[in-house]
Length: 200
Ligand code: GDP
Image 1: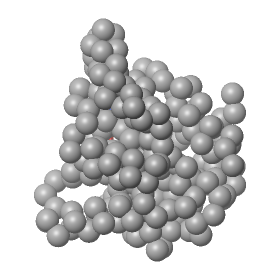
Image 2: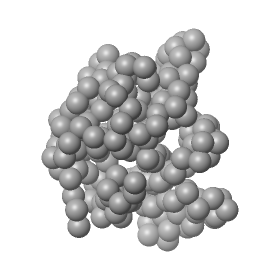
Image 3: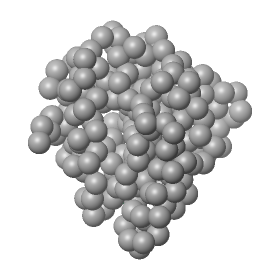
Image 4: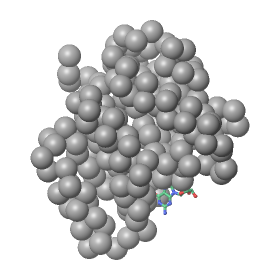
């Protein structure tokens, strides 16, 4: 299976859509509430602990962080985590605005990987991201993270419940994922490859 994710390189941080690199080529964005397991998933996917650390450097947590794959025309994008500590309402609104602008305006965006702790899926932030994506017809792949925290039966029934909720929306898919147990990586790579390498 094609796996260009292991050679991902930090490209650039950008506070707003306007400061992102030129909007050409193809990119896939990762988003999730803070603590959803986004850094762990990106580290597992890329096999590089420094990648997501870059995005957790104080000051960079509110930035859009971009990583180049085999070339700068194919990118992974780490969107700002959400729900950290006490941020003011006005700052939160600003983040919402940047996320919304990026999700709704970025032409090269092929799909969104939305990470949710499998024990608490579909929180208000997740629904907001899904609404924006659905409005734009943007495909979303939901990663139900930390699946090792649930027994097989409950994990499977969480997955089925989420899949059922979006059964009328074929552009929304979901899977279980565990960075700890390294489960679900191939399924994730298959989806990323489809968006980044197998579509015009
Ligand atoms: P982020 O804030 O979304 O980037 O989340 P992190 O990747 O930093 O993970 C948040 C917490 O969840 C950390 O304590 C991780 O060790 C833990 N975590 C992340 N992925 C997994 C997983 O697959 N299994 C378990 N058991 N814990 C995980």
